[in-house]
Amino acid sequence: MATYWSDNAYNIPNFHCESKACKTNKPTCTSMRAPGVVHSVMAIETAMDHVASTLNMDPNDVRALNFVQVGDVTPYLQTLKYVSLNKCWTKVMEQYKTLKTECDTFNIGNRWVKRAVAMNP
Image (cartoon, rainbow, N blue to C red; front, side, top):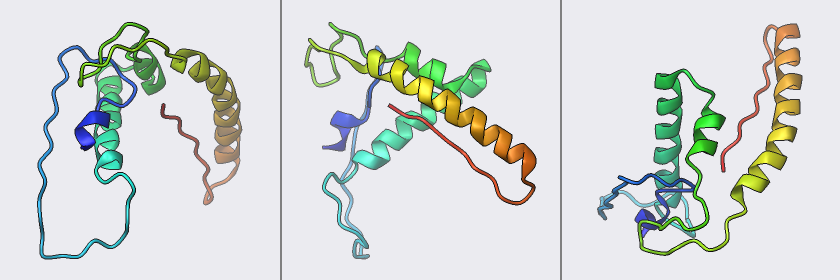
């Protein structure tokens, strides 16, 4: 079920999620290997963006502050023994900052064409 991935890469102590299956009279337009996962991850990432906006913080800082750590217990009661997310995030963040600077420079010099870069765990 998608509920299992809805916490994404975050440890949120009071997190609770329920999923409901629904049937419609419309056929699906695409096939998915993990139905519901994309939607549930999008929901938690939107929540992280909302928290960052409310607290006037960089969304990437909010994400990093809430990452799972060794010893955390997932919503489905799995204790995490190995977590390399912070190490990976730090490495990729260096590249992200370079790309972000390049995008900002490009956007200042171009009125109609814009570039963007984003990062999620």
